[in-house]
Image 1 (cartoon, rainbow, N blue to C red):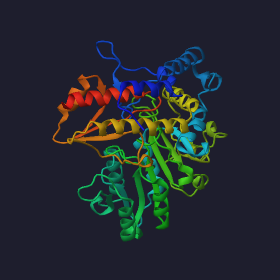
Image 2 (spheres, rainbow, N blue to C red):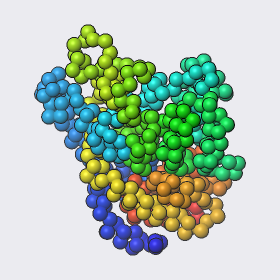
Image 3 (cartoon, rainbow, N blue to C red):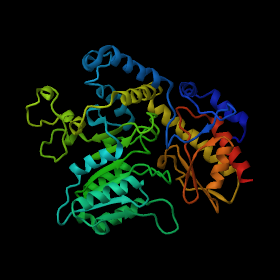
Image 4 (cartoon, rainbow, N blue to C red):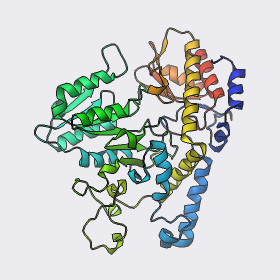
Length: 420
């Protein structure tokens, strides 16, 4: 299917219907002026050139309108978050009313756990994957402690089997069979940051709900990478950041999904703020809290418009490209990367990410036997920006919006030279 040659890579780029989107991003360059092979969108996505224009527009409206920009700006600031909902919903497979851009990822995770982790004396445990991103583990441990539950008792880790790197669904089934009556929340990363393994979300939800357990997902490494189909999955909630595959800028806002079956449940406990209050009476200031319907009802404060402008620039680009088209290219582009790595025929390296495209996004985690970070340093010096994770893994993620087949070819060539 694939060929190991620069000519073949360029031929693929020439026939790629999405190739022109690469020109819409700033590609970092080395001191010599050569573009880096940037395969680190799983850590920080590249800047869309449109982001500056979108932010400058809000700055101009602020300078000329002042406070009146809340209602008189071209994109009024009061409902600004609503301008993001439709495009964001398409990317995560949800209804617009089920998503909202607000806060940052771990803040949103805590807000969701306030609502959906309601421990009792008999049902009080949380399940996460054993190598979840550290912030998730810290967050769930702190929630357990907040409820006076010892994490050693209240936290269950879904682990790979001895000698394996990936989690097996049947082992999660065994956990639920053994502990199901005591588990209050399944909180799984949709796509594992270290291995790149993408989990079967709908099956996890069905398993959790079968045991009367709430189910939520951290989409930090899934959003803009895989299609989680959140509404159809039936998940109770999900949270994500926007600065990785969604290219919104360092430390930018996160997103939140709340399934529509919870949209108007006034009995759900939550931490409240005025931006989650009924829009019709929000500025009357004297009313008791009246939660908005849907995910908007979990908002706390009015949003930072400049950050949202950068997100809007990226989401508009995603909408134009079409997420289904991006996912299709992602499967092929990552498949080409997999082929080239295999073709190195080097016993020192192995791919720990699942081989099945349905069980991964664009990231491949390359394990290098007996290596340390000096290998990654040499790769960087060779003009590649990727990501090193201890003890011996290089994570590379060819993002279909701006990475090319030629990028992937150059990476494989430089990895081989570095190993040699």
